[in-house]
Image (cartoon, rainbow, N blue to C red; front, side, top):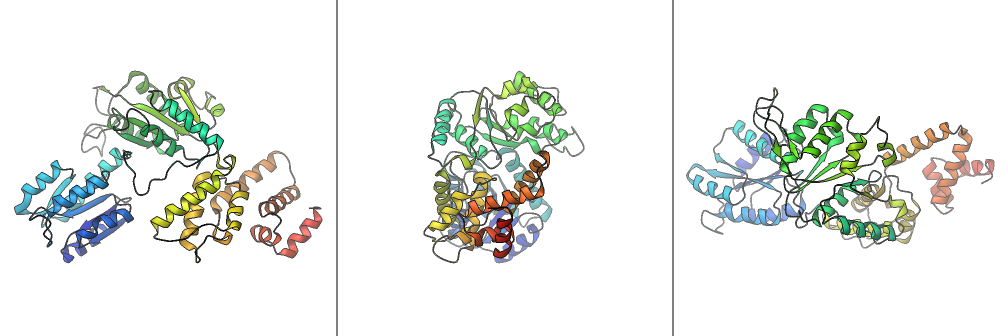
Length: 454
């Protein structure tokens, strides 16, 4: 549960304090609230995974049924949030009714701490398997839109509209940070399976053992920690869409197992001999270029043909022209709302800084830069000094440039000359800003410019 944010809503301050102390070392964040009237406001502001909700409050919305009322509110607005009801022994019948109305579980107070932790852990396991199943019907608070009006993005949208309603397996290609995940979500929304599950799995991060257990599921006793049956992602996606992210990074052994499932349209959970039919629409994504995937020492060609009925190439941000400014204004509005700010816009110098930058981290880097600018801005508009680009991306670019220079036998002096030229061009000839980026004084930069005849 280390990644979970839990909200506890109860009018008993002692109970809130006790549960907060119990859960604090177990989860990412614990939020508490005494007044259920504030519940929906909190859910609109915070990315909550689970709510512990009392059945009875001192208010009188419905006698004895306050918990059911607020449960309905939560599930209507945020169907992906798991709710565990808190009830007194005499109201167990109401708790049972809550299960029929969408609650994941209930717990009777006073409880044993071990039982509470086990209940929450079980619910969080459902989140890991099933949400990865994100409800894509309706907008979630933290959901980013697919934004762009450039010609290259209009072509992409046209292609998506053509292939989304089909059952074709789609391979989404593109650099890191270009929005492949958003493309996959948009394809699911526009498909005929839009009301069925959408499950995302980062297969590139799975070991061989986890690959099988996560994708195909397992039976109780299949291995040491298999204390109960667990449904795999293929089975959870039955009738809907399965999105396999970073598929270019899986091993040849994993590829063979995946190919078998795609060919036979059935999975066999670990510890079982019984095949389970699965009906899924497969979307895959990778930042590995297709020509590299075609190397059979790295990736099976028969699997490429299975996952790549249609190929969608997501363009890098540097090729999207004025979409950079469109996205910048979109993120400004998004983070104004998220952080309750009222920043009015980006100054001309800030817009120019964005236009001049090459964005090695693509849309993700632009999003990071605008979020930071909104948080740190001290005026009513975003200035160029408020926009800082990711040092992670700068280091990656520097390493790539160094490797490229070594490969082509470039001298260190040639590398320095190119770095100076690039910085000066990026800041439209502003020597002070270029020097600051290069870590030089103005005088030192002038000396180097004279040296290299720039």
